[in-house]
Length: 111
Length: 111
Image (cartoon, rainbow over all chains, first blue to last red; front, side, top):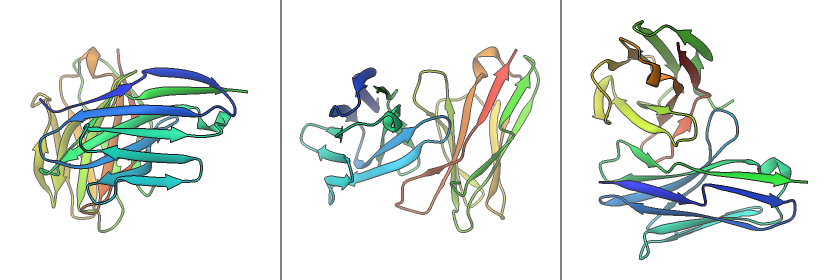
């Protein structure tokens, strides 16, 4: 059965800390892995990682895909209170018609 | 503003009733997917429509049904509502090979 597992489930850090969020997957014929940030309702897109693009960076956020270990990490450096959110990992296989989401990691950044 | 609009934003229904949720996608986004997100969980795939035809379905009973229209809008219908149907319902649209763009969701409460 296809599945995506994220860890930790929740995390509380102080402003300025660096955090690493984990995502592991078992999906038939993997095609892409995506990271989303969900603050209130709509998840907002962060990164998409594929076989041809296994590392992405945007400002303080970066992500790496390890196809051998079937996993990905999302790093956030110099965290800010505005980074507080649920971070969702989603994987899509070659059928292309659905994303499998993990349960998310709830990040709280305290001043 | 994500370009994907959902209505209504909140809804309260009684067990046994029927509900219709609506989604308006960006022009040209011919794929629309619906997800159910229960509290503390990641989004779960309900189904996907491509060019007005169902193109994949998750593990949801037939009382969950959908429609997609030529103007890129779509509907999710749920019959015989149950208490466990209480959740955030997300609509997402995409171009091929792009990550999904999510709407802000409809929060459905069944009492």
